[in-house]
Image (cartoon, rainbow, N blue to C red; front, side):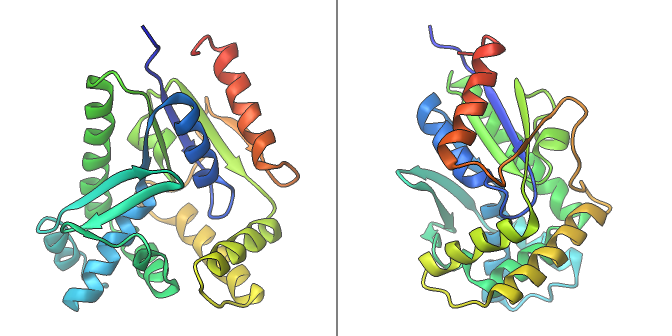
Length: 230
């Protein structure tokens, strides 16, 4: 019988979490949970419903009324909001800003974490490995993960990667603007009261600044083998 493993990946924007998570989920035949897509979908719902994004209670009320589903696909994941595929819409810059703001609400994060934990639990019950990535995965969502990875990279490298992601989606951005946005996001993620971005004590820090995707994936696969998880 194949081993069922829980892989948790934390790190700042542009460190390569999504790319690593997609690659690992394919190699492990695992369910991939992109928690950022959940906050982005909620941000889009707030925009659609014209919700005051500074009102935590109203944002939480909306969250409890909508359905957010994640579905694996070849190049990553599809996100559905109330049954509608919003995989492209949630990556627009204005949605990123809203998602960053509402993700700082303690009650919103609490509800999201409950949903994320249920996704992990459901996958494990089905004897299917799971790869989860986000900002508080190793410390809050699955602190009992079999392996915890904290990805990081030089902020200029992260900004360049982010810019390429925007270009790939047909979104025009300036590098300076992307860099400023990353600095703001880093500050919010590390200083918020609810589930701030932290390096778990038992996490392995992997700097991807000078590594290719293949090298990063190989590093993590080697760690899994060394832990006898493969």
